[in-house]
Image (spheres, rainbow, N blue to C red):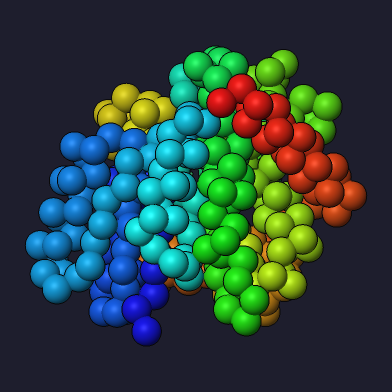
Length: 308
Ligand SMILES: NC(=O)C1=CN([C@@H]2O[C@H](COP(=O)(O)OP(=O)(O)OC[C@H]3O[C@@H](n4cnc5c(N)ncnc54)[C@H](OP(=O)(O)O)[C@@H]3O)[C@@H](O)[C@H]2O)C=CC1
Ligand SMILES: CC(C)CCC[C@@H](C)[C@H]1CC[C@H]2C3=CC[C@H]4[C@H](C)C(=O)CC[C@]4(C)[C@H]3CC[C@]12C
């Protein structure tokens, strides 16, 4: 039977590469590209159809950072498909990034250098803003819009006797200390990206707890450091050319894959010899906090629905 796969943020970077890979590995897919920009979505669809001429690739308009758009897109999905087998929650933003150069050069000569390149810990801040729904933009895009999408699509992803998978594109930049349960949206901090990714790790755990019995299984992956529009937006391009040799060092110290763990986050890595592999890492997560996050998101959902 044809599998139905929906990918958010499918028109570029990791999302587009994922679609390409999915079509290469399974010729029996119905792939739905959920994109906020129809023109860029069309271009991605054409590119995919050029390399996979018999593939079934649909386009869906979805701005995951807008409540109204998520609700409308979910209606459309329910009209088009009777189930979703894989839901890749990949769309993400890091607006107005700022690198702490002092911390970077201090880190370069410290024992923490590998970790610094892998996680950007202590290096990156961003300036966030409110969106038209009155939500912090990074929280709304990276986390809440996706949460609302899952909630809306429950009839298609929570079906007795069938398994559906939700896969979050999280990040090794997700850090517990950047997240506050009192300030879910990260209104007061300067690391909204890190906070939103940590929240998605926790939400994945909570989803498993609440929805596994209904056939929904959630997992998180970190694609590693990938050169995409998001990363190119952090520094001018000549900087990237300059630092690529240093970054190669970080890949040199990769390790072999470990055994699977229910709390694992899968990191895609490249060894010093250029071989790609995946490594599972246990997430630094407090289950109680994940439960509180889940109920707070449900509460926020009630609030935003009332406004619609
Ligand atoms: N690059 C990296 O090193 C890493 C990236 N990630 C994560 O990977 C994911 C993909 O990012 P990446 O491929 O790097 O970056 P890109 O900027 O290339 O891709 C981001 C995608 O998300 C889409 N998007 C952004 N905002 C919205 C929105 N409101 N509604 C719908 N789609 C939206 C973008 O669409 P548009 O073209 O319209 O902007 C684009 O298709 C993100 O979640 C990111 O946090 C995680 C770890 C490392
Ligand atoms: C000469 C300097 C200005 C060089 C600064 C290097 C930094 C721009 C990059 C070093 C490490 C990079 C990152 C690491 C982790 C990524 C994470 C997994 C993610 O989700 C998004 C991108 C990263 C934060 C990425 C960003 C650039 C670095 C900070």
